[in-house]
Image (spheres, helix red, strand yellow):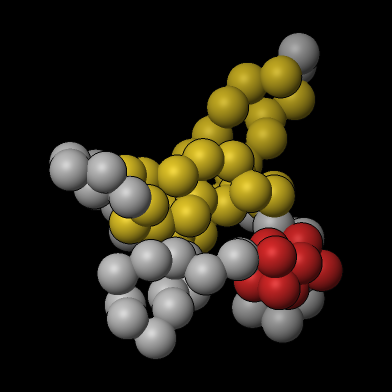
Length: 80
């Protein structure tokens, strides 16, 4: 199972109901130098409007953010 692929679906148990989550990984926006990440507020708001919740980052070994990780309940967007 590749945890770094976008749109993977996983199941977690909550009480007696099954909740299926899908995950999206996105590279953060970069400044013109491509070395520093720019403010991701616009990207976060865009994904939030589509029902995605920001949950974590995946970091480079030497530091810095490689991916932003989002999740939402599977079937959460009619545009799929």
